[in-house]
Length: 177
Image (cartoon, rainbow, N blue to C red; front, side, top):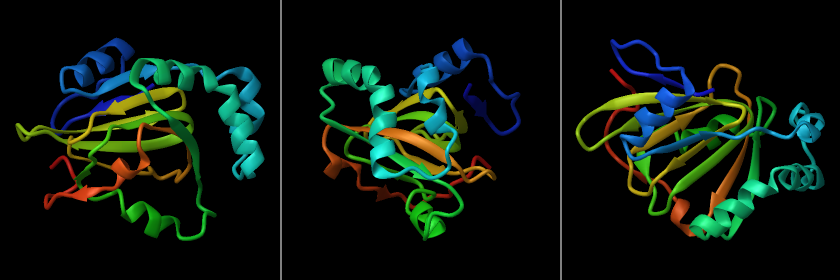
């Protein structure tokens, strides 16, 4: 279950409170079960391309729903762990404050990570996501992302157009201080 972290305030951990907090700030959140049939693959650190496709098949019902509701045309599975060559350089592209010209939509099927947000009113907060969390960051919202100390995540990424997913950097700190 996701956790909201704000400077000087108690963490928000209850599902409906997390959902309401994010909705009030233009970010959609939900909690989608990962089918038990996928556990053998979610438990593996390294996946072949065919295993990634098999894992995507286990959660395809969510893609079909998003296709119908929002018109998403494609999805992929990103698998990050400490043994990925160039992991730190790859993550450095997204740990700076940025926005996209398309929505950033993620379904975490294993592992953990942290999204940070800076809203136009100056409010800043973190969302620590974990397995079964779905997060929908609308286009043009300033945010950043990094892996937590476990440095492990498997996330389905949904796209209407992959060209809109390029980060547009903003000159501000990636912290909630």
